[in-house]
Image (cartoon, rainbow, N blue to C red; front, side, top):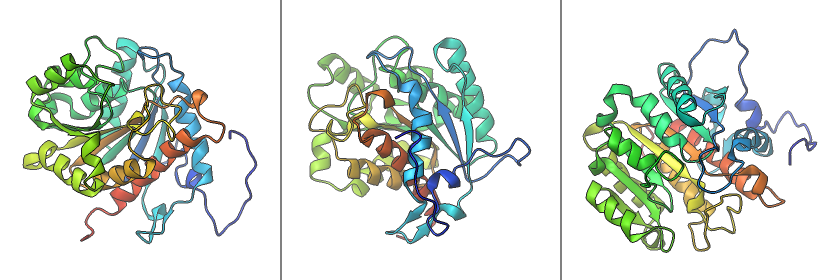
Length: 308
């Protein structure tokens, strides 16, 4: 996919052109800041997730910034590519991510992080919230609880709760069978986390699920961070996610959830995680899904304030 020649058509702009890195002299700020966070070194499964931010930017060349369903052109939304955080792994790397997130939050009402593995959720949210972490809520769209001990891609939710995020304002969407343990399920109950399982998504719409999650995580108007872990999807559509499993949610369900959650003004930050671009299928389906999630998030932000 990288380096392929695509035709030029002035009447068919590419999403990659909409999300261009601005020149150094451009004024800071806009509607959406996009930050690459190529973390991978502490992943529990061997991963080259550090290759993914660049791959997602490349995949955006294959899409336009126009939403047919919403009759919406993202060209009206100011999105700025802030580049990548250098060496984001380990204590020093996490500090750099948090600093970059804090800086971006002063210029952009919404920040989207493109990972990288799921460890970035901790440093991103910590940087955005700062001393007010206890006043935030967290929504994860993920097959896993991410409540393990240590500092890795299996621990960001535990680390955030221990740092101050109230468990009562944490919602986990997509938790599924046979990829978690009884120990961590019990830990989730002890923390007071609201779990909306994968099986519930078979009987309820993504819009309904998103509304419930936002009501819990954003209760009282608190700001919300959303983690979009692509391994929540069926392995057939997310082969580049080391921990994706057969029976996960569809690509369409994840896309709907991303837009519905981003549409709520309480959502201040999001991330897209757990894609290893080097492990993708030949057609690049997982990376392309991640690129579409960037566009779904942007579309949701552009629709804020709409009546329906």
